[in-house]
Length: 107
Ligand SMILES: [Zn+2]
Image (tube, protein in one colour):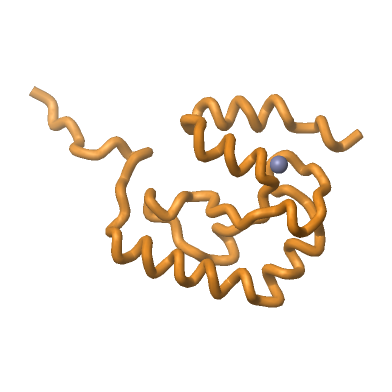
């Protein structure tokens, strides 16, 4: 009856070649002054907590596998806990996690 879309819009799988290319770009970006400045700020984009630069990782807000790009607007510093949670949670559960942690580190 209805035209069911083949892909759930949350789960568009990117072209593997594109993902490989974007991963390579991410590696280069990690060496950039821009990224070192981000790390130097020592702040997790998601929970707002303060961390030492080596406790932060580069996170793609829109994951590469979902068509995200390695760009300054899509790459943020995230603490390992947020990074791990983001990977494991569904987008709804992740949003709830963000709501729950919001403000906790601003005391
Ligand atoms: Zn965090």
